[in-house]
Image 1 (cartoon, rainbow, N blue to C red):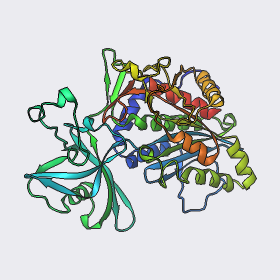
Image 2 (image 1 turned 120 degrees about the horizontal axis):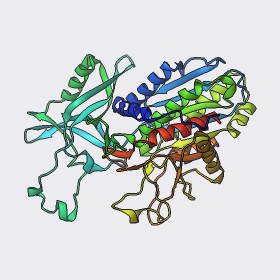
Image 3 (image 1 turned 45 degrees about the vertical axis):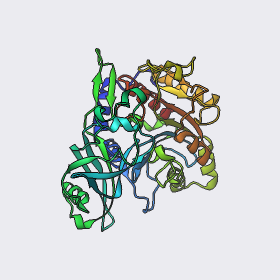
Image 4 (image 1 turned 90 degrees about the vertical axis):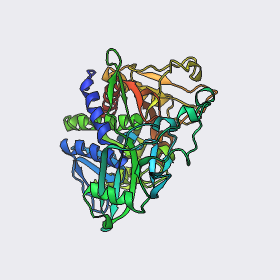
Amino acid sequence: MSSRLRFDRGHTDDLMAFLMAGPSPYHAVAAAAARLEKAGFRQVEETAAWDASTGGKYVLRGGAIVAWYVPEGAEAHTPFRIAGAHTDSPNLRVKPMPDTGSYGWRQIAVEVYGGTLLNTWLDRDLGLAGRLSLRDGTHRLVDIDRPLLRVPQLAVHLDRSANAEGLKLDRQKHMQPIWGLGEVAEGDLIRFVAEEAGVDPDDVTGWDLMPHPVEPPAYLGRDRELLAGPRMDNLLSVHAATAALTAVAAQPDDEIPYIPVLAAFDHEENGSQSDTGADGPLLGTVLERSVFARGGSYEDRARAFAGTVCLSSDTGHAIHPNYGERHDPTHHPVVNGGPILKVNVNMRYATDGSGRAVFAAACERAGVPWQTFVSNNSMPCGTTIGPITAARHGIQTVDVGVAILSMHSARELCGADDPYLLANAIAAFLEG
């Protein structure tokens, strides 16, 4: 195995394109699938019988994707190496009855999804993306990637306390975007979106739509050493894991001792409890079917899972220059310092000492520096798909990621080198 980096700043350039291509979880998995297809992977349907063929395969379900590569000579009990991530980001979601407004303004009724920083959605030019569910049971992706919506902030003249006492936003009253003038007309938004998608509005029976900032990602700073953009939590990890899987699959089969897997779930930001979330059966079902398709028994399944390791990759907190006291006094992850190992003894992260050794070995093989993140004891600790994956499937899991600022903002900030350092670490992990 090489200790030389295989990904460079070109990976970060491609990440910027991936972020733009993924304004919703459904678009993100479509973008990942396109990269997998280009690398020779093929989609398999969950409703079809699976065979024992080797090579790259993937399953799409809603906003989730699971992809894996079976090398020649893999046995039924061959363990998996899994790179896990999630496709959803905190944002605003369109309600079932979206047409609303008042005082001559036409507005869109939205619900707050996940723990988004509400103020970061104010006064931004927003597009609208997601999927339409059609009468025949199919879905159509739609991405209106131009200024369409805006959540206007109240002028300071009408809220003199906003700067002195802090901005106070009511999630119901203050977050409904405007999109025009005139009388409210029921069904107007969906008719407009359907026409944009090129489908008959009468064929639309359901929708999953969400506003997104239309400002593209950009390098930032005097030396362009920073990257600003939307949805880094957690499309940065989805992109890195996709690149790592395709790179490993391009290796000679006799150099791949495990079955490398990408598992990118939806709904992490609201607890992962869905058929496409990490707390659902999707990953376990795919892994089991892979074992059984290769002629394996329950014993083979148990042996494979016992030797499996999952690297759960999600963003973490970089040391903030204006709020240093909010961080642990001895753990200060910095941007461009390499991926972070996330530790919490109360199992908000799944990492233990054994997992630390696995990650350290992967970074050493890749020639990648790495850091450790631990929360300040006085601050609550977030969580990821890591503990859920470990508990649901009984597999060793390690939580890692990239250190960023402005997590859960409509526009986040990371080091421009960290995305490709993470991808190199994940590739070395998948190789084993």
